[in-house]
Image (cartoon, rainbow, N blue to C red; front, side):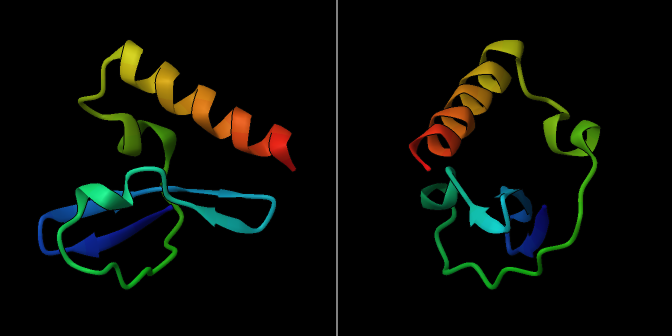
Length: 66
């Protein structure tokens, strides 16, 4: 998912109908979520493989917590 912020687009996940934003603290202003669908390639542009894996692992851990 993505939403517009003053700093540019902000990407986050939706898992089992719940918004999961592991990087919200990186945005200085409160986020008014638009919940616009985003493509993986768009969201991961510029990310390293290490960053992508860290995010993937964090999302998987949240899902497993139930």
